[in-house]
Length: 180
Image 1 (cartoon, rainbow, N blue to C red):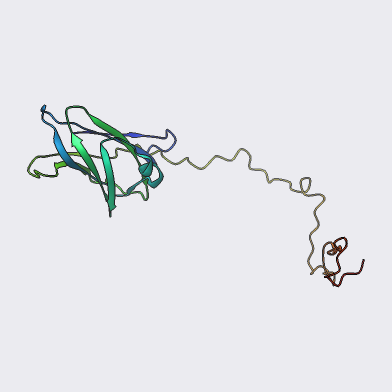
Image 2 (cartoon, rainbow, N blue to C red):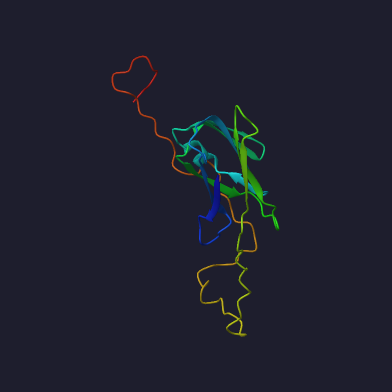
C-alpha cells in the first residue's frame, strides 16, 4: 500500500489536494475481493465530481459514509492498482491529525495493511496593509463633475413605463375576435 499527497494549486496549496493511492500484493498470490478504506483528514472532503470519474478495471464500486470512502476491489495481485482522488478543503483546521488508509482482504480480514497520510500545508501569510503614498487628500471634484447630489425624491412618471405592447392579428383568423 502506497499513499501520498500533493497540492493541485500553487496559489493555495491547501484548497485542493491530490491523494495518490497504489495497492498491490507483496506475494505472487492473488487476493480476491479487497476493501480499500480511505479516512479523510479533518477539514477535507472528497471531490464528488472527480470521485464519480474514477475508473479502474479492478474497482468494482465505492461507498461513502461520513468521512470515509470504501473502494471494493475485485482482486489485488502483484500488479499495482493506482488511482488519484481529489480532496477539497471544506474548512481550515489548525494542526489536523493524520488520517488512515487501510486495505483489507474481504475473505480473510486478518490480512490487512494500513498507512497514514497527512495534509502538510504551507499557508501563505496575508498581505500587510499597503503604505500610503501620499498624505494629501484626494480631490474628487474632477472625477465626479457630471454627477449631481440630489437631496429630494425625484418625480416618478405615472402610467406604464417602457414600450407599450403591440398586438398583431394573425392573417386570415376568424376564430379570434381580432380587428386589424
